[in-house]
Image (cartoon, rainbow, N blue to C red):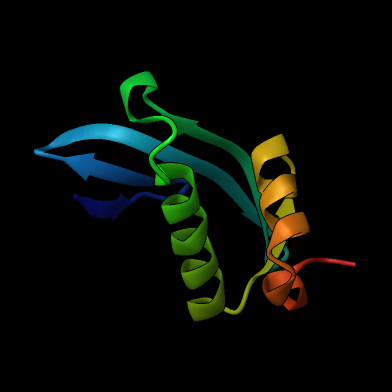
Length: 89
């Protein structure tokens, strides 16, 4: 599995097929996580967590703060407080 990017998504690919996606928008140095989508047969395997960690890596690399909009992203940051320094106030 590997990650690929475009301007508003980070994809997790398996054999050239998308199995998951993190959709985001960037405005004023804030990356807003709109959706975390995982194909049904891959759910419950930690794929969403892998995507979130890749979003965090992308955010840190590009000096962006994070605004978790989708419920999964909100829950992730609630349980992973070590990343809270990346969140907007």
